[in-house]
Image (cartoon, rainbow, N blue to C red; front, side):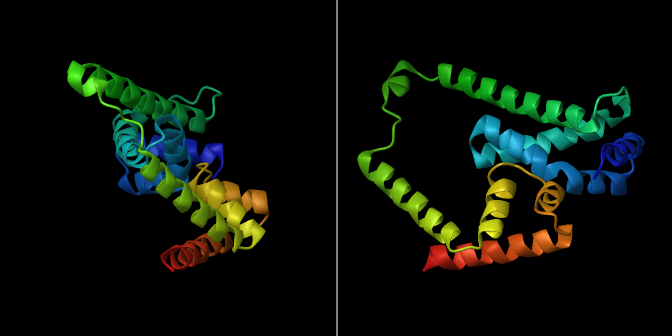
Length: 179
């Protein structure tokens, strides 16, 4: 979705249009989730922050001004700032822990590290079983935060084709990882 469409959606969201909000979420959530995930490096936190981001967008869309800046820049700034705020609150919470809790070794045990490495190797092997363009799409969308549209543009494919590839690839990955 191009900047003018996102700008129009933001204007409609600013006047309380729920359908526009749903469309805005569909067009931008993958990208904003990727930003949150990159900052926080924790999927659960990123999902929570993404909800906060869209609440903030809903509440502040009327203050968005078309000023030459991309509307995605405005949305990305909100997502990034929310994620950074979450990081700061984590640090504050961590500093509030008692000295005894802070002394505890939080590193994974050698056994936990071995298990994680084994799981990562299994995932890599399963990704290698996918066609190269399918594996690239899965990594870009689910690990790097690309939107479906960005991936479709990059692969020069219709968006519905890319969505089908991703859905089938995830099914294949699930089967491979569960075997």
